[in-house]
Length: 154
Image 1 (cartoon, helix red, strand yellow):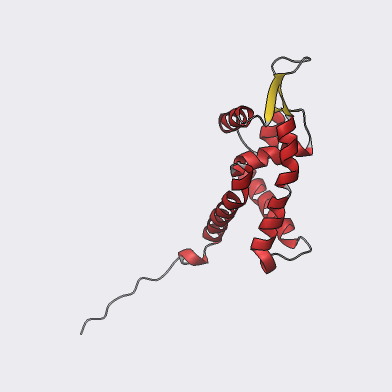
Image 2 (cartoon, helix red, strand yellow):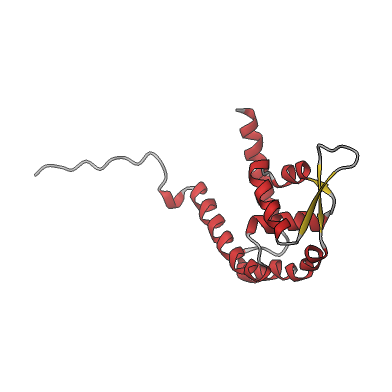
């Protein structure tokens, strides 16, 4: 009888990989946000833009892109769709015509109140998975910062 050699595992199984857990969690978040945002008529990236503008109206496209870590090739079509939907308006800066400023319309401002239900919906969906003291958010920010720092060293 011949003995079958079992290859020695040199890496963790897929389910044991941090990257896969983050990937799956990202998909689950996107799926849940899709459902939560349907009533607002927004996609998840559009919602992020609106959140940023609800924080501060009149920002430049460049500043918004930096804040959301989105390049202009991704951000510009998002902004165009939000403008067509009547939620934002874009205008050239009077001081520097190279800059485009973003402003909420009345409809965009009115959507803020309706959008207030999204974090509540997400909180309910997550339930006990997140500690109420905000530890997960802090951990995720530290993880992001560590990864960005390591990537910048390469």
